[in-house]
Figure 1 (cartoon, helix red, strand yellow):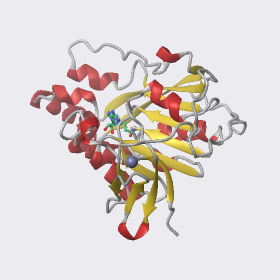
Figure 2 (cartoon, protein in one colour):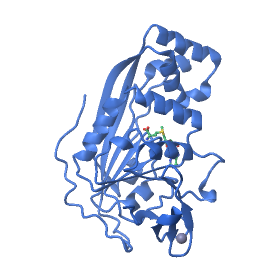
Figure 3 (cartoon, rainbow, N blue to C red):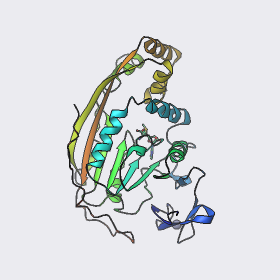
Length: 302
Ligand SMILES: C[S@@+](CC[C@H](N)C(=O)[O-])C[C@H]1O[C@@H](n2cnc3c(N)ncnc32)[C@H](O)[C@@H]1O
Ligand SMILES: [Zn+2]
């Protein structure tokens, strides 16, 4: 039977949304209506929340990432994040900036919600995954009530610390994965004359009042690409693609023809939402209780 209520809230008036099953749309008490797309996601992004005509990653980037991740070359990243999440036993997980849902699909929790600002990415994700509740939304204005998820995942995505603090109750967890110093340094050295190491992100550093860093570790390994198409997909899914000129693409192809050896270098940070400032009123939805959010294992990878 289809679920009638949802944790998502109306992006216009912030009241809760209910499914009108026969019409495949979500409706709030004020009459604002959001259609359920053919693929099963709901677009909660308002026109004024878009910064461009097609917000988020462009279609070719989405497709390149989908093909690249399907090769399994970042499987260790998925597994590390999944283990980190599972060790917390969350009931409701939110994947912020989920892209085409490659990592989202692997998350283990009774309830998984995910959003991205790129509609095409969310459509791809929803088509492959009926279990997760997908929405198109902006990280700067998350259409969820306060304190309704107990863990947020953020893999190479944008983070709005205030919004994460709002949707998580005290004790809630953030698992964030971002590039570490040497991530894809070999690719970068083909693109830039002087390839500087990545500045490692501690994405919630600015809000130590709201988030305590409880664990951080590096996941680093080498991998080889032998297919020129896969090497170009990797290039296309990175920000380096903005520097694309035919000579760089040719150099990438030539590297792949002889076996392009690359370094994957990620930093995985785990934060716990502090009790302060005090939680605001939680609305009609009961927030998850938090004592079950206890780490049961260490997943450090070196
Ligand atoms: C590097 S991709 C990572 C996607 C996915 N987490 C993964 O690791 O495969 C970053 C994603 O953030 C999305 N994004 C960018 N700005 C956003 C925003 N303001 N709100 C929500 N998503 C956003 C992009 O559309 C893109 O899908
Ligand atoms: Zn409304």
